[in-house]
Length: 194
Image 1 (cartoon, rainbow, N blue to C red):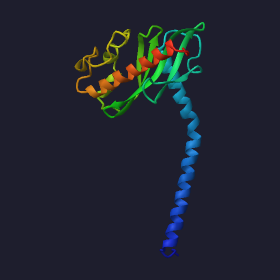
Image 2: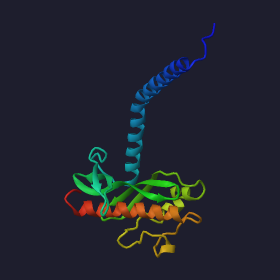
Image 3: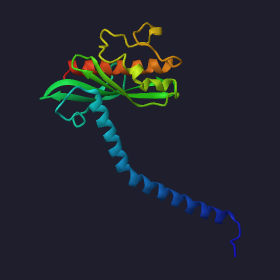
Image 4: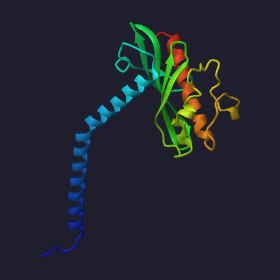
């Protein structure tokens, strides 16, 4: 025998379903947050390893936050040291001016500020256009360059960077993220905390 359809019965059923769903979602979150955090840490360690000069410290354990000059933002800095001497630094940087949102990079610098390597860690740019910023063909033009003498702007804006055809906004955002990382590195390497 079915219960009569009333507002009270619908409210009870809806409440039970909502509570059950909330409990299930909470349990899934608790069960997966450890593995997700471990995967994020492994991705971060790999990115740092790929962008900094040789080191024998633990840059991830020594990471610190540094203020971005002229803004209220801060970036994570990972100092690479060889026998306690700074050899370079990885900086997790971003630009919010991408075509489809934020672009996140890991930028690695030699001690003198030369770009050692760049890795795009996260973006939502258009596949086949802005996403080409992850390709070696685009990234190679930055490697071994020092932003003190290499203008981090696309050629269309008077800089030295060959932008991605059809993705000038993404190219500009990428350059901006690298420029912010470089300025932060300069501030840290010449400041009190290398």
